[in-house]
Amino acid sequence: MGITSTIHASGIAEVIMDCPPVNALTVAQWFEVADTVTAMGKNPAVRVVVLRAEGKGFNAGVDIKEMQNSQGFDALIGANKGCYAAFSPQWAKIQPYE
Image (cartoon, rainbow, N blue to C red; front, side):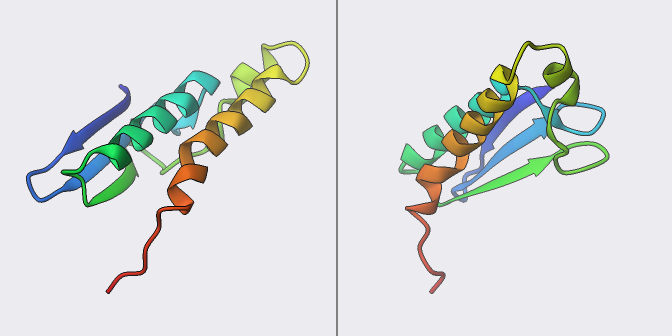
């Protein structure tokens, strides 16, 4: 469980979230998604990255229990930074399908 990845021979990479029960990610898991997606983006064998999830839902967002158990806004700010780290570099690389 957690964040895993697979690269298929066809160049399709899968980043899989498996964080039951609803795939709500902790701050650390957001940064793990960021590291994994970034690594896939740098791999010349990867042509496309598919983000998917196991279980009941795709992604419930941040882990609310982690937010409730932390002082101040550190966990909320950390989750936002992790989400930004995961996806902002990728937007710059998006190319139209031809």
